[in-house]
Image 1: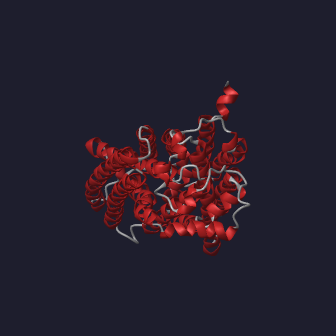
Image 2 (image 1 turned 90 degrees about the vertical axis):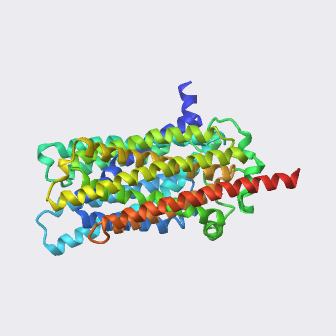
Image 3 (image 1 turned 45 degrees about the vertical axis):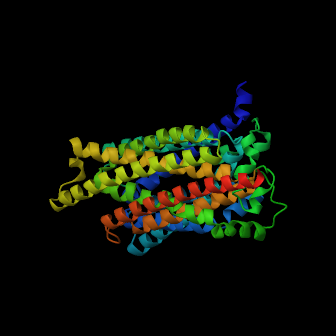
Length: 470
């Protein structure tokens, strides 16, 4: 019974979540504390380079995933995360006492490691997106995504607590990284990499077939290439050449559907450099920031469970799809705006504190509670749009793994472009915190409005198609 359960779509989703837990418990600590571990300038440059590489790599990632298969692509992708950790080990081992020229070379190694990680991330997330959508029977995509999202974000909660404990230790209060810390990161990531061998292809996973997977109404919204038969995520790229795969991915840039979704995809990456690095690093001490990050990602987990349950109550078609889409986008918009409202108050408070040379550690009482509520709102709202984006891809391209991989690649490409720009702007010497506040909030509002317009348009298209066949 246990073995059969492990072979099910639910068991494989839990396994995938556990593999990501190990990888991202390390990576979330690196990302969330990049300004502390590497310094504000190097941390921002590394992260901007990483996500710029991620963006361009997403042009080819769907082709690679469709040719090599999901499991091998995920393994290779995780090895990209190993590269940054290895580069960081060299940096912390040999940078102390180095000359300025040698130090500059070591910083270049960190940035190069970030670039390679970006390539690996494109492979990892494109493969993950296709694989989890193919594990779904069409009626449980939201639930499977919520399970994966919950376990995945538990890595950030655990990482935040672990990092808070690390910086609380008397010998680590200088706020610097160390060889020992990154050795732990390396072990965690390697566990995730080799664990991909335990994942099974969707064709061998025990799952029931859902009528939603072959629902003609949802397929009426697709371009012709998205209406092919079901495929499984294994080495099934023989029928398509590399050039054909790449052209099919680039074609999404001409589709009105994905052009309308691009702003909200972009927001899911553009928001967190400001929320976590700019606001978090300025508002909290490293110990408190670790706990606040745990709160942020705990809210992501709760929000993901809520969104997954909500989305699976919909049939994924017609008025049901419209209702759940509008509700999900509304929850996202309201909580996002509430978070940015509290952030505006926090910006004013920080200006006052720094003008009096008061440290963030003096945040307490209602001020600390408001800052914590801000992080909760942001975490919960982000989970709504992340879950909705993957669910929408699943129901729009039901039964077509190749097109799902391309759509996920497009989503991750635009998202990583947001991450890259966000980190490039994150040092407030480059762009003031208020400008970053206005930019991230504005993109979120525009994305939510365009997303709602697309939901309404999809509903109208489905109605017109029904009239044609009646």
